Image (cartoon, rainbow, N blue to C red; front, side):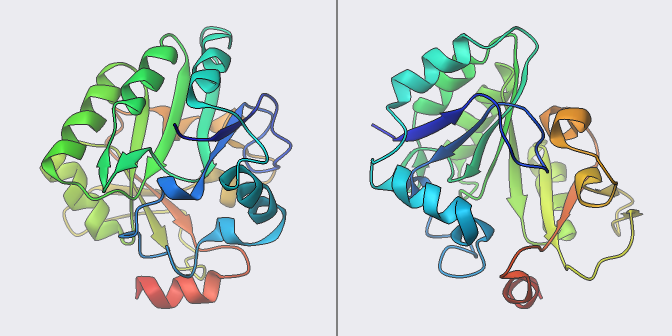
Length: 222
C-alpha cells in the first residue's frame, strides 16, 4: 500500500497553512518528462523529506491518510502531493484514488498528475472529479494543456519558461492562460487562491519553471 506523509498545517510559503501530503516516489510515472531530471521535488529540504517517505521512515499507510482527510473540517482546502503522484500499477491509476475522493467528500482537495492519459486513467480521473476531488492534468506546454481540456474536458495546468513575464494570455484557440497567482503576487498562497481546486474552470493555469533545476526544465519544455 502506498506510503504517504500527511501534514495538517503546511509551513510552505507558497501553499500557505493548508494540509498537504507527500507520496512515495514509486507513485511517479516514468513517462513524466521530469522523472530523471528537472523535478523540483528532488532538491532541498523537500527532497530529504520525500526520500524518507519513500523509504518508509516517515509517513504512514494510505488507510491512515484516508482517516486524516475524513477528519478535516467540511469545506477545507488541501493539496495532495507537493511531491509524488497518484498510486498506479504499471502506469494505470489504481482505485486508491477513488477511496481518496470518497474521503474528501465535502472538502476541497486537489492534486496534479503526470500519468499518461490512456482510457483507463481518463475514466478514473473523471470519476474522482465527479466525486469532488480535483485532479489537474500536468503538461509541458499551454498548447498541450489546451488539447487536454478540449479533447477530454479535464482541468489542465502547464509548466512554462521561468522567463515568462506575462500574467495572462491566450492560446491559439482563444483559451485563457493564467499564471499561478502564488508565483507572481506578493503574499498570495494556495490557501488564499484555491483556483487549482476548481475542476470546472475553463482556463489553463501556468506554472513558471522554478527552483535549482529551472534551467533544465526550460530546456526540456522547449
